[in-house]
Amino acid sequence: MYQSDFTKFMNEYLDKNPAVDTERRELRLTWWDRKLDAKEQEGFKQARVAQKPYVYQPE
Image (tube, rainbow, N blue to C red; front, side, top):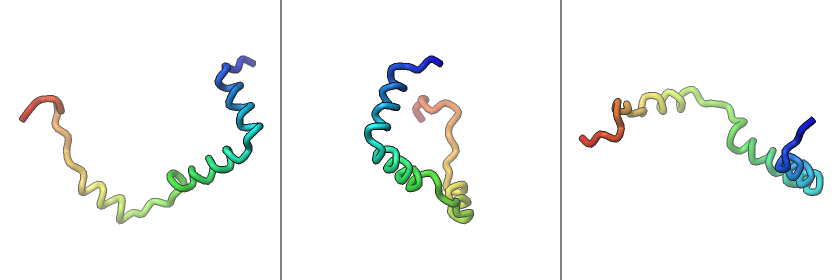
């Protein structure tokens, strides 16, 4: 199976530095694996500003 040079490098790097993968997983939990708050999401939806059809046209 073909592997790019970068993929080979990353696999070797992660094998030599297992703490990097552990840290990556912990940091992922910080930003992505969160429960969504329905009230907060509704507030974001209501606060959204409609975009103009052509954003580069001056007013």
